[in-house]
Length: 376
Image 1 (cartoon, rainbow, N blue to C red):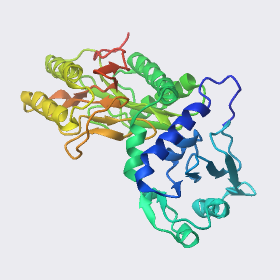
Image 2 (cartoon, helix red, strand yellow):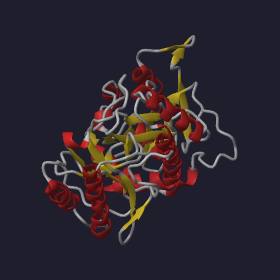
Image 3 (cartoon, rainbow, N blue to C red):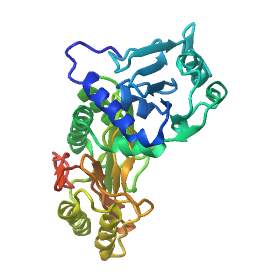
């Protein structure tokens, strides 16, 4: 990725250095000699370097804050926040090598401490081949990394806003082109075109729901019919950071009385979010409020999570989901997506809004039209 000098979205070295200090502070009780990160999202959070699949980065940071980064030598990142950058040969004569992680480990291993008492690492992304060379106990820090990534810094929010601006442009265009007869594949292609145009570069992610008369899923070779609803749930990646929000659109621009009633009921949920969401509130409490509110209009049903965090992954903490026991904290970026579904609605209404958790509540970050109508 070629970056220009005045790029407002270039890697923020100072912000990355602050995050590096936050990681070391969080790991003080662990008493490790150094930290080894293998998850690409964690490495971008730490250094600013986005490494796309199938290539594999590794990063280490010692107790003095010195960062070593191993990355494919053919990629361009601008200037990552690392004290030593080691390139590995990811391609042989323009052919991508099969064993990317092994190639990365080979160049990283000589730069790791020869003797250490304890190594902090992400178990789910730890290269097993390094065990022999380190010969030291490993301490699992996956949960610590996930928790640290929840708080969004200014440079992260700047990239996420850029991704969200692409979402806004896609929804505006969708309202102009959605009509009976429009094929889901054509819709998908148009949304991707607008995303690229808005971002000014290729998205690092693109998804996710493009189906008419269906709760969601990838585009099919299927035309839209009058009377159906489109739940258009969009997300793009901008240099590793994600957007995720949704709008529902009536295919023929004329929602039925039932569809409008369901839509208004879903929108009421956001008043509950504004009243209840703030630091210290349990996510299960908000989910339970949504469950009672949305299932009060049976036979229409609410049958999924209420939302989740967004950032370097499309889904991350906190989780508005009864399977987790998270508590809201300042700096959380939320995608809140209440919905109701039934065949009588052809096939449901889901609206997804983004909020930033502030010191005393939430700030709306996706303030663009929510109505069901198309644009003539």
